[in-house]
Image 1 (cartoon, helix red, strand yellow):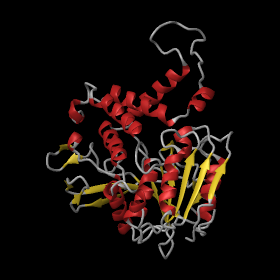
Image 2 (cartoon, rainbow, N blue to C red):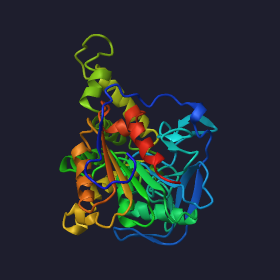
Image 3 (cartoon, rainbow, N blue to C red):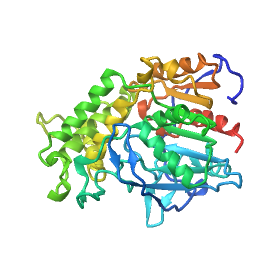
Image 4 (tube, one colour):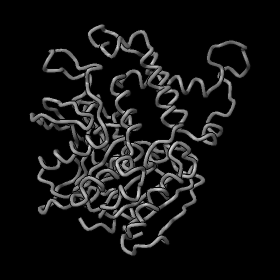
Length: 399
């Protein structure tokens, strides 16, 4: 697994039929209590779509210690509904566990005894960074639907600005899953001299038509909610709960595998008998509604629209006539690509497209395909073989 030989033989297939789940919080090897930090960037920022923000703020967290050479920094990029809270817990809310806490901490695959880890809430997010719910200085009211479209390229540039603020010239690694994996790949493309390794997990070089279709249906659920008010629902004192709920329910179905749903829920009935009604009867219905309600209680509808659009727009090959190999020609970082057998949303074949394009340029690329029953959500799980792959790769990176 160590970065080194540049050939197509470094392809690994792991079997994990009984994958562990994320599990409970383990205080013994956690980064412990953490607090978010803020970085204000007052300079105008031109987005890829052409709009200019008068300035922006990013919320981030750090774990571990930055070494004297500032060479051990690792950037963690979050997926659609993720945030800067990657590991540890908040002192005032011990239930608020970082979304990748099973992967990051002392002695874990991304070991904070060796690396200085940074998690950032992306521009347009709803966890503290400047986004649709932030005040538009031109109007004194929340941006709402007036917040401009953001892209993966915009996020990478913002992350680079934060690295500059922290005095980090080059990351030891950039890592992410799903939409976060796309950012990790974009880092290797846009800043080849500022990242030594990129870990691209459960990602794809661009969305398929089917994936774009799923995103559009989810957006339509929000856009057609009567409480959406064209994106300016903040001053109405309402939240488009129904739209967010449906969007999350649809998304959650695509994150799981059919096998996983069959094992967890099957055709189990809540009451033990059919009632022949339109109320909740099957356990899977109850689960999806619970997930939808929970999501609608904390996530911003406008941010959901922005994040799914960023997914749709991601396509490094677009400016190269659709040639992914040409788009990756300048990559100099070592790359680890990880895919999961039951991830039908970002199938392993899509990850292998990235690997093949990199190998055309004799890039230092490793590929691992993990057998897992957890579908797209596998990248969040504490699967032993998956974690072993990440650990082995990171252990061969000199801080």
